[in-house]
Amino acid sequence: MSAIVFAIPGDIDLPTGGYGYDRRLLREWREAGIEARHLALPGGFPFPSEVDLARTEELLASTADDDILLIDGLAFGAFPEALATRFSGRLIALVHHPLALETGLASAQAEALRISERAALRHPRCVVASSPSTAGILAADFGVAADRIVTAEPGVDPSPHAVGSGSVRPVYLLAVGSLIPRKGYDVLLDALARIADLDWRLTIAGSPDHAPATAAALRVRIDAEGLADRILLAGAVAPRELDELYGKADLFVMPSLFEGYGMVLTEALARGLPIVCTLSGAGADRIPDEAALKVAPGDAAALAKAIARLIDAPAERKARADAAWAAAGSLPRWQDTARIVAWACQRGSGRKVG
Image 1 (cartoon, rainbow, N blue to C red):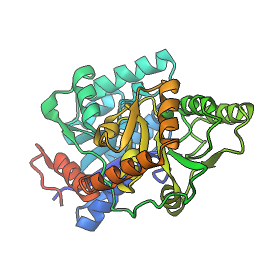
Image 2 (tube, helix red, strand yellow):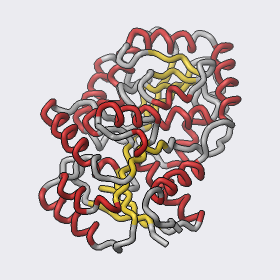
Image 3 (cartoon, helix red, strand yellow):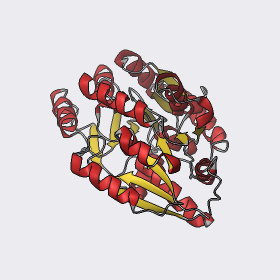
C-alpha cells in the first residue's frame, strides 16, 4: 500500500489556519491508521531561492517511487513547471487559496505567482481545495478542470458553549488571525474608532511575525486613536489560552478582505458565539444568517454599524448566539475532512492508501 508524503514548507507548528489544517490531517491519519508522514520543505516559499528549489527537488526525489506526494499550496503554487512535471505522476496539490490573491503583494509578485501556480496546476493528478469558493476560483481562473478538483472543507471539534464575559458592559469582542494585510484589521480599527463612544473591549489573537510592518502600523494607529487601553494585541496564543478567549467573548468579529475559507468563523460558531463578519470566503457561507451580521469586505462604515447594533442589543446577541449553537452540530468534523483528502490522494492512482 502507498503512503502519503505530505510536503509542507516552513514551520508546521506556526499558528495559522493553513498549518492548523495540515497538522490536523496528519493527526487524523495517524489515529485512523493511514500511513502518512510529514516532509518538511524549506521555509522560503512562496518566494523560494534557487537553493530552496534544489533542496525541495532533492527531498521529493528521496521518497519511495510509490509514495503519493501531497504538496501544500504555499509551496506548490511557487513550483517551477519543470519541478511539477518531474513528479506529476505522484502529485496531489492542496490549495487553501491561490497565492496570487494574498493581500499586499506588489502587482509584479502577484502576476508571477498567478503564472507559476497556473502552470504548476497542470500537473497534479488531483487538486484538493479547502473550500467550494477556492474550487470555483481554481476552475474559473487557473484552468483546473472541475473533475480534477476535490473539495475538503475544514472540520471543527465539538466545543463547550462560550459563557461570555459575564458583564453587561463592556462588551468583549474577539478577533483571531495573524496580523497580515489580508485579515483587514486596519478596517476593523477604522470601524471601532467610529464607535468609540460605545463601551467595548477588543482582543486580537494572532501572530505579528508574518508581516511585521503591518503589525507595527496597527500598533501606531491604535495609539493614535487613543484606544490602547481598549484593544489588546495578544500575539500568537497557545490552544488552551485561545479556548479561554473564545469562552469569555461576547461577540466574534472577522474583518478579513479575503479568505480561502475562514476557519475561525466555524470555530466561533461551534462555541455558540454571535458573529459579525465580512463576506470574504466560504466560511461566511457556512454561518447561518440568523447567527451573524455579514458585511462587504473593506467597508468600515458597515462593519461599525453591525458591531454597534449588537453591542446595543443584548437580546439580539443572545438570539444570534442561540442560532449559532443550534447550527454547530451540523458542521463537518475533522475525521471527515481527513477521509476526503486521503480518498483524493488515492483517486486515479491505482494505489490503495493505507
